[in-house]
Image 1 (cartoon, one colour):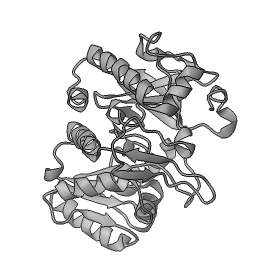
Image 2 (cartoon, rainbow, N blue to C red):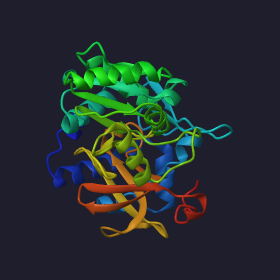
Image 3 (cartoon, rainbow, N blue to C red):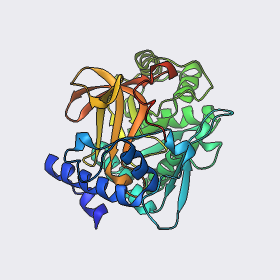
Length: 325
């Protein structure tokens, strides 16, 4: 079974072989992706390296149904978007694959969720339907063996009381929060936490002025009394996440890779420490599209470590202009 092989990748050779296999499968079974590949004259007959696989611009998820499976859709995840903007839709035909992906990656980077108190401060996501982040957080909370685990919406006072008591009692705690809500929390209450991981999921979601990562993390680290702010990098269109234990440097699970494309030429890649657009390989996403060109900017630090810097503004997206069906 393909999913079993994907989640047991143990070498670069495994990753490359399965990537080419998934590319061939999606070329055959995903009409939108096939049309895109043909436009670029890239097919399984002339693509022999992972770097030569075409990456579908993420904007396609706003206008097309991106699926590589004939199975019935089990759930449709949607992006948050802002008023008047078209949202992305990710049609998931096998939720078991998503669950295995996020449980396995979370356990690899943070340990068994059963052993943690997991608190989620995700108001902008809770206020709408179809969030893949809420699905993941809810599943992790349910796996936690601690009754204190749960979601918080606007009840910041209850959250700060709970957080201080749990931290003082030596519980292992994860607070997963959207950036603007974490800022609201530290601007209202003071913390000196010793046993808590603070993980931001990014995004002001129109609630606050955007901040550069260094500034955001400095404010949050001072506010919570911790040395580092962790981060989660995921998106509606993917089934896998990368994680950072600090400084915006992200590591991926074995079935996921981040590549840095030249912003002037979307079909070429940059060497380490050069800033460009982020292309994501998410092999868990084999029933949709595993090769996605995002609008995010990053720098490769080494083979499996990537610094994520922020977003292109519209004027910076040059190399992708020709990549529209």
